[in-house]
Length: 270
Image (cartoon, rainbow, N blue to C red; front, side, top):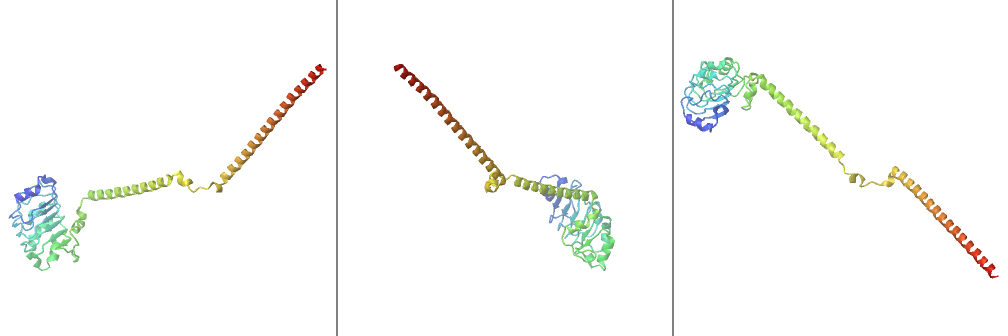
């Protein structure tokens, strides 16, 4: 078993390992495990050949222990050093009497016990006796007191909800609230993005189909432009007329002078 444990470690620190499978490694007792495995939560020792649980190590975080198909007939007091144990599988062992199970009543966290294929199941009123013996027990051999079958292995954790630390539940609630807040923030960001998309409409798209002839402002501007054009034309006409009059006056003045000169020359000749 020690070699198997070392192999399963894979160079990791024992305190960092949560799951350990030692199925089918032959050993009459548990050796190679110690309190150094303080983070271990799941331990499987199926078909190992265990005949005794003597010197079982104190594992403060262990919640699930698989001991099925071994040769265990007693000595269950060795498991009372597991303060968080919720699931214990002793099916296929050599347990023959209810009295052998008495040490388990001191494990207040135990909610799921499996004794299938043990001789004790043939004892009269076996189920009621076991439930009475272990007050914390919810499931026995896969069924509760009312005969309802356990759906899956996760149900034993749900049944042990009352045994969990309140702080853990509060932390989960806080995490859920934070997730909801994150979702709300994402929704607001999406709405802001949609608003920005609507505002960023190109100008060419706005004026692409624009017809100024149907716009009242355009018509008013057009009328004003026509009035300006009429004023410009009147000014041009007045300018042309003034220029014409000036030219006529100049011709008249020039022609009168020449006539007087010719008349004066004629008088001298006489």
